Length: 280
Ligand SMILES: [Zn+2]
Ligand SMILES: [Zn+2]
Image (cartoon, rainbow, N blue to C red):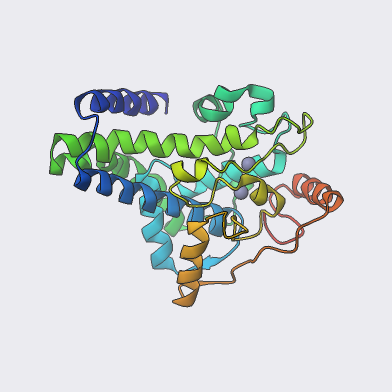
C-alpha cells in the first residue's frame, strides 16, 4: 500500500512538472474517469453496500464498481468493512481514522497503510459471493490499467489520466476522514463530523462532503438535504430509480433530536453493523 501511494505521488509530481496544464481533451477525460469512480464509491460502496440504503441492478453495480476500483477506492469488501467499523466507533479511540485521537495526517492518510483492514467476515458477512469477491482478484490488473492506461493517448494522458487523477481522487476521499471529522466544538470521543462546503468542488459535487448529514442519518440514500447541498450521487440514484435500475431507496427522515442521535449511535456500537433503522 505504501509503495503504491509513493508511486502515484512521485509520478503525479513529475507529471505536473512536465505537463502543468493539460489539454482540454485530456482534462475532460481525467475528470470523467474521476467522476465515474467517485459515483461508484458513493453510490455503490457507500450508500448501496455499506448502508443498504438502496438496491441496485447487478449490471449497474458491477459497472460502477469497476470505476471505483479503477479510481483507487479498493474493493467492495475492504471498503465496506472499514467503513462500517468507522461508523460503529466514529470519533472514539477505536475509530481507525479519528483525527481527534490521531491528528490530521493520521486521519487523512497514515491509517490507510498503518492499520489492518477490518475483517470482512466480521463487518460485512452480507458482502460475499463471486460477484463481490472477484474484485479482490481483479484489483491488481485494474490498478495497472489505471496507472498505465493513459499511455494509449500519449505521455500527457499517461500522467493526467493515471497518477494525477489517482492522487486527486485519493485526497478527495481522504478529506472525508480528516477535515470532515474535525469539528472544533465536538467533545473528545463524541461525533465530530461536519459538512465542508468547499470540498464539494474537490468531490465534483458527488455529495460526500455533507458528512455531518450522513452521520446524523447514515441510512438515508440522500446525503445533501437542501437545494444548495448539491448531491450528484442522489441525482444518479433518482435517475436509476426512474429507470427501474434502483429500488428500495431510503429517504431521509425528519431530523432526529440530539438525544435520539445519541441513542442511535450507542445502538450502532452494540450491534456492530446494524442500526435500529436496518443498516448503518
Ligand atoms: Zn465519518
Ligand atoms: Zn457511511
